[in-house]
Image (cartoon, rainbow, N blue to C red):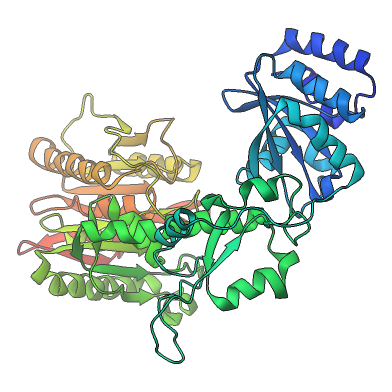
Length: 531
């Protein structure tokens, strides 16, 4: 939709339509611009603003505002809804819609989505009375329906008998002070059962009073907090989001019970003195679900942004081989009882992670986990393996040589990587092979599922072997721009009888050699690169 067309369709950003004739003219013109199959209206705190929204396949296509008598507003909505007998009503409780919220269809749609749980369908023949109540600011007295046994049971099942308040999770079948068992839970409304309550909404209070989706299970403390102590701080949409998050977290953790337990390791090294947080238990559970595993006991933190590594950048790379060796030894030794099966949440300089992957090797089943930058947490962006997500350039017309250069560009292909590789190519007479993520996959999540990472390791392993056996390669110079998980997968490709690998990393506006991988007596040795 062009800017001009969107401006016309987003009438809500302009002054409200103030006559039936003007509405009819706008309606006729709008039908020539867009189609819609659903009509809704959104109100806010104290019903001060009303926005009418038209959508097609749940995508917002037009909005408008009316300044008319309640009977005329009802007629307009009936006209817009065509043959449908009802329209959707939502309220963004506790929030006052501003002019900024009306600037674009996207901004209005965002507000509409936030109010998704404060919603019901209103018959056309009830609209006039409802809009009259909006205009008169008339709130009904009394409360809606009491909770039925079915609603109570549904909410109890959804909560697993625990407080749903974010960060609490207290079991509510016993009293922690006296130790006695019983039911110490409180059922709390998102939208208050009374329109005159702290989170009351005209009409919706009564309609949603016994709806399980509108009810949380809380402990005594948090029930008092949202209803008595700080009711104004907890809007209905906030509580709905809290309930939704509880369901995601609880089910994510419980899903792990279906899987085989494996050890989980965290190795966190600073990058340019910047540190990163370890994964939460939910992030661990979600990440491991991709490989159908769950965590055994607790996270084994082998390295956590040690001050020495942060405060000693000048000697970082001299120390790194021993740091890598220590982490790899612990993982390998401690996973024997699990068939060398483990998950690794590793973060640090790309070259160091490649070295760690090489020390771990590919004969075990240690699976690296992704810190997904776009989501800001540890997770995999895809539920299933995507297949070949990359292309390889430079394999045609290869010739025998002692040196080869492999560029691996998965998150980006920066000029500093390209130019550094080209300079080295000129010095060594080495051919450049580029492994590049396809355009649609380029980014931090290029390897979007662990199975894709394992397949990539296997393909890279074959390439290393081919360069050694068919083209007499003695040294491979590795220039990499990849995610933390991809770097470990790359390192795991290194194997016995492969050429030596010099691993380069970013330094200011270029890339410099940091580590060297070499096989001695069928064991991978990682050392700091020496000129």
